Image 1 (cartoon, protein in one colour):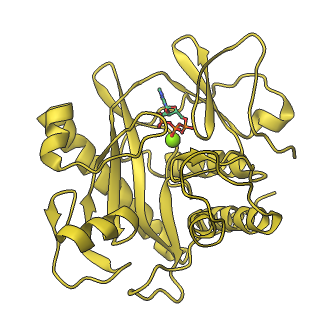
Image 2: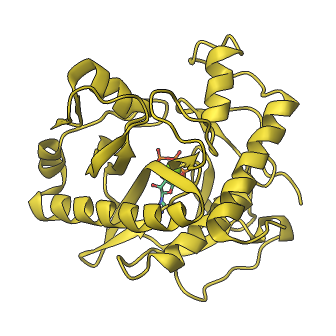
Image 3: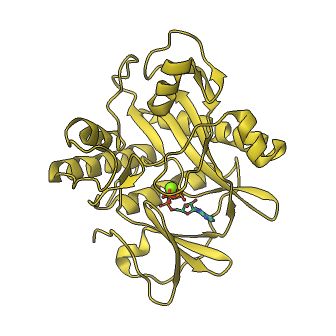
Length: 290
Ligand SMILES: Nc1ncnc2c1ncn2[C@@H]1O[C@H](COP(=O)(O)OP(=O)(O)OP(=O)(O)O)[C@@H](O)[C@H]1O
Ligand SMILES: [Mg+2]
């Protein structure tokens, strides 16, 4: 299988190249193609992770099927487009939605930005948590910690639920909060049976004809923190299935200051990162990644 860093489909208009996905216009539909690009700290790295886009797409499809009872999603059943073979397993044909300008994050554990905010303020997105929690500690209840969807190159900012209401209106804000937590709970329960903790995850919702629809990718290593349940111990950052490995290499070993062009990832980091994506896919779906 070819590694795909970018796509260019003759005859189709590319509406956007995101950090990972290239989005093409199909009229009232979109063709979303997941490449092998990887980003960290909101910067796209120059190095591709072979098969990553296939894994993200297949894992999202798995979750869309599994979570379909909770909320409608943007997939258009049966819709296909003819594509070169190296792109086939990376593509989704979806409804074109108006994406809500909020990243809908659910956290069941205290990690990443949530842990940083808690250490500073005792709160995450304005939600006061019990004192004395340790890094990676499980929360009594999963919490909804939305953030703004920042412009390209900017970091997403955590916001409170009150700010979410100001942005979306009360009924939409309440609905996406409730959906985010319901999706998180269902996914975390499934993942636990496969030996994986979903520490946190991010959803994007869109609107069409007044209906709220789950969009983008779901519950992938790019949008989530997955930890092995085996050996889980609060008090430190657990080893993860996701790109925490890349982040750690960038922060600890690369000497990069997180602005400007990122360095090439060494081959060993690429290979171990690919292995992590494959392992997350195989564990969560119970299928072998071919
Ligand atoms: N059904 C949909 N309708 C419209 N836009 C969508 C839909 N599903 C996903 N998108 C958008 O397609 C893009 C996917 O690309 P990618 O995930 O690489 O972007 P990104 O770098 O995360 O960008 P962004 O900062 O805009 O989220 C995102 O901007 C996402 O919001
Ligand atoms: Mg994205």
